[in-house]
Length: 261
Figure 1 (tube, rainbow, N blue to C red):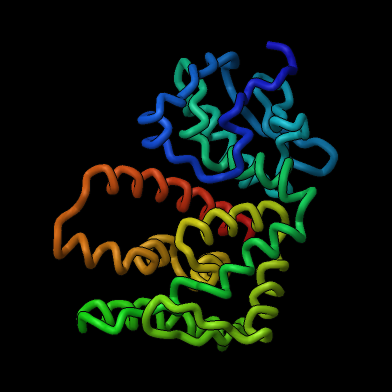
Figure 2: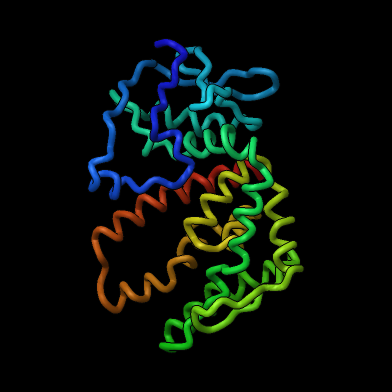
């Protein structure tokens, strides 16, 4: 196969995909056929690049699909080797995040930092229920320790409130969040953006990035309200399927954050 863009439109979208919605709307395009036998890692200019049958793979913008860490590259290679007769980008979250990091974050680093950090102004962990008592208890148990950790280790002191009315946070807290976010390279920022948008909490994302929370614990914390409602009223099958797909993205982004550490 030539050096043309074999990723297609799916790899161009930096947003987290929703395959359920895409299928419902009839937007799922025809998958490209697998054109290589084996993916591997080769060193190029001090980086660890993905190669398909020895040929360097490239991002949709034609940049080298390469990582500073060999373990990151191996994680992407594993996705390529798991493909069947066709290439399904929905099953390759690490590759998609890498494409976003290389083609997007690398060129717009400061804008991405600001986009992630602004979640601190309305972080999920700061908006609490005032009833019922059981939900209040679950939120406090899941969220208070994470906010305490952020205050102690990151200098991020966010104030919680009851209800949904916006509560402004201090400039000092927001500046501390931006500083913590800015400490990541392009792969870390791309991954942090995925975790933040999926959970609605930059504090949870930073806790995962720093190894304070396991991804499963952060995911559970982000779904305290949803799980409580499901327990009361039952689970919606379609919602559960969407959640499963989002978890795949969360898991991949968290893995890249762990490898970056």
